[in-house]
Length: 501
Image (cartoon, rainbow, N blue to C red; front, side, top):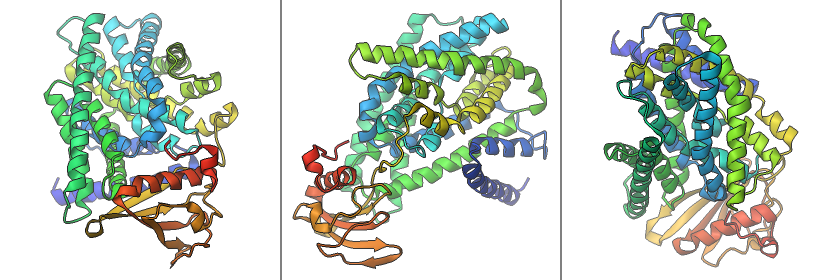
């Protein structure tokens, strides 16, 4: 097929996928299922485009997941997830181990699978999906701590599950013992974290001091740095997934020029990666071979959702409580159990044993496909209702301020663009009541499509966009003050609100 035909077909699929996102958003149907549907339609059961190379699918899938994790790190606000890190790390390590063991025991006992296959299936299903979690949870009015646990967990738990699945998929060797698992996992995670801790701050330092000739180069540079971290960690036999996520988290929360533009670019790139990934996985699947794997898939999925995930959450909640790191009540535990969303990650991980030639790996791939489709249909649309039922939703609370900045090198100043969200207590506050530092000023307000220069007595309204000019030295104080007033009003200081978290 000629290049122009492929370009036409690819563009048509992307446009159709973008249109389907709107349909999915209105109907509550997860968009990933529609993308998989496009893959089915184009594949051997539809238009007949052949694709049956699990090795190529694995390589493309891992690259797409790295990009999705980079977007997740860049768009995660550190102040929101900082308090959630201990619980998220527990879920991404101890929780993953508990989930693998529970699923493996059930699959071996109920389905009669051998131990290697049972453990591989448990490992494949142990990881929650970053794309699914970010796209669903960021639309829910959840407390920042609870949302932060789920977001950070989905960013962290890909790394250990990849390590487990790769080790178990070494078909020529025996199943590694527990000591080998732990040692290999600790080494790879340590190397990945080390690469991120070196490259992230160094990249942020360089980008703050190198004036690039075009603003569009900043997003490219940031994404390139995250992939340098991924490739560098893999070459050093470390965890590329952990490296890319931590590097993106560091860069996304650093004081970089055009930070909001970088996040927007990364979000668009991640959407493109998701579309391509799910369409490819739909092409790889063989729907006519799946009926015999529906029942085993449903059994494993039921064990995962109703037993393995809740048990892993309970164990981790108990662990962080006795260590005095966090306290999670039963309502939050129930929501965390139901919100362990699966998506592309388990399907991509299922290509690893298939490409390695592990026996029955193609059937395992089909079972994972069935599990992801069913659990996505069941969990994703019901999360808002579950949140309300458990009383963990926070309707009416203001969302975090969206702050964009552009450097004004000659003046050694920054231009902040602040959008006032619905529910923010900035609504009704007069400009002089903001009590900004003397080196900062609100210079322009955009309201309902019209712009005007405010005075000291101008009242801020919801949905206003404020342009604030501030010197670089007091920018952090300005951002903290604006966040504090947004949360607690003009008397934020009396309430002890500092805008730090």
